[in-house]
Length: 356
Image 1 (spheres, rainbow, N blue to C red):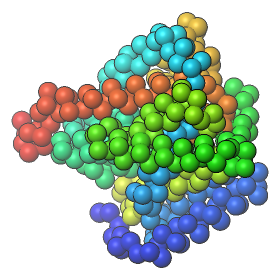
Image 2 (cartoon, rainbow, N blue to C red; image 1 turned 180 degrees about the vertical axis):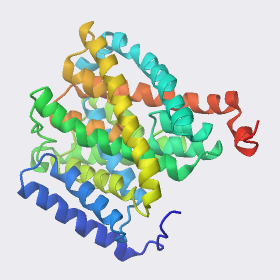
Image 3 (cartoon, rainbow, N blue to C red; image 1 turned 120 degrees about the vertical axis):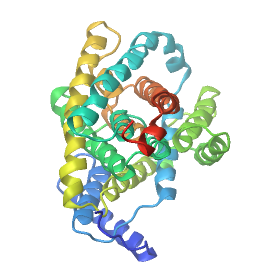
C-alpha cells in the first residue's frame, strides 16, 4: 500500500522551498547544468524517498507554466508565423507517431506488464499528466500507477535529454533563459504579467486544455505579433519556473512504496526506453527528409511534458516555435482522442465487469 502521507501543513511547503533552494545552490556551485531545474528535482526526489514531508502546490505549478506560456508566445514573431506552412510536413508525422506509440505501448502495459486496459491505455499515451489522470479516473484506471508512470516518464526524459543535447548534438545548454529584468521596459513587463494571468484564467473559463500554459501563450503571442512585446520574460522568471517545475516532478514520488517502485516506477523506466526508440525512429525520418534540423527534430518528438521541453528548447537556443507547435499537436491529439477511446473500448464497463 501507499505510504501514509500526513495532511500538508504550511511548514511542509516552507521546508520544500528551503530544501529545493539548497539543491539549486549546490548544483550551481558544482557547475552542473540547469541547476534551477535539476537541483530542486534531485533534492525533492531524495526527500520523498526518505519520507520527508515535502509538498508542492497547484498554484506555484500553474504560475510556473504561465511564465513558460508567455515565453513561447513572445517567441511567436511574424517571421515564425510565416514559417508555419513549412512545419506542416513534420507536423504530419505527429499522428503517425502517436499511432505507433499506441500500437506498441498499450500491449506493453496490458499484455506484458499485466495492467488493466484503462491503466494501460492512459499510461501508454504521452499526454499531459493531469489530463491523463483525469480521463483515466473517469475510465476506472489505477490513478496512483498513472501518476508514477507519467512522473517517471517526465523525470527520465528531462534527465537524459540534456546530456544528449550537449554531447550528442554538441550544443551547450548555456543560451540565456531571458534578458535581465532591467533590460525590459516596465510596460512590457506589465503586459507579460497581464498576459499570464488573463490567459490562464480566461483559458480556464473557456475550458481550454492546459490553460495555464496555452492561455498565456495565445495572449502573449497576440501581443508579440502586434508589436507590444519584443522579448521573453526575464531570466529570473524563467529560472523560477524551472525551480517549481523541478519541485513538481520531485513531489510526485511522495509516499512511494517499494512495491510501487518495483511495479510502477520500473514500468515507467522501461517504457521510456521504448518511447525513446520510437522517438528516435520518427525523428530520424523527419530529419533525413529535410523537414527539421537534428536538434529541433529531437526536441519536437521527445515525449516529455510541454513545460519541461520548453525549458530545454530555451536553454539550448533551439527554434522554440517549431518545438512547441509539435508538442501542442501531440498533446491536443492525445487529449482529444482520450474520451473517444474510453467510449469505443467501453473502459468504464470493463473496469466494473473485468471478466467480460
